[in-house]
Image (cartoon, rainbow, N blue to C red; front, side, top):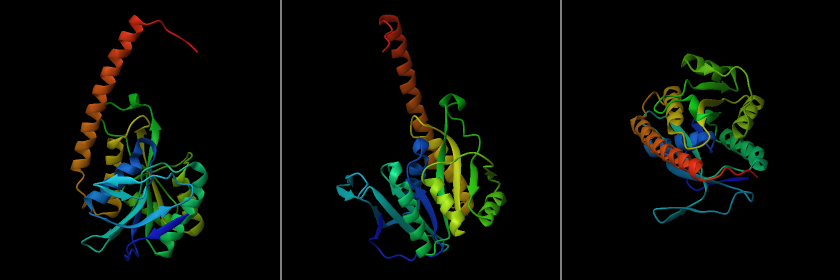
Length: 250
């Protein structure tokens, strides 16, 4: 697992966002929105023999599937965002998490934040309704104090899996601030509303509420409206099939 730097940038003290795909693609949506809104530049790629052999073409330009973006805001605060076009296979997550943590420690970054979705049935949330709340869990007392000071409810008990779990555990072992944010999200489609809720929390935690979230919230409403139309049509088609076709098993 290699993180190959393609542009030199001072990211000492940076807040690092883990944008690898999660339930509802919450992490991916948040990461891509931050890259666009904060006008971050690509500074590195993540490469592994275990990654799929793909190239993402945007505007006629090929891009590696896992990229790292960075930038310095007007107030001097530094932000780094990992963006991935795919969900890494389970057997590489440990190596990926360790490589990420080694890299952020080598560059003396400030904190790692992982936006994650919690699996939930879509029926538990009505269209247009916000997720009930964003929960947080942190690797150090200082990071937990930050969550409490920003009125983020601490996730008291349960199991977190995947890359976020590895980053949290590495944060504990290294005494490094790692925060995972959790919001209920649909596993059936990209949940932009859950992503907007977590982006709002990140905005408050580390960005001093400088991020304009209205476009993301509007996009969430647009996506939900389109999905509702799809589900409505699918439901009608299913009813037609029920009345015109025999039920088959096996």
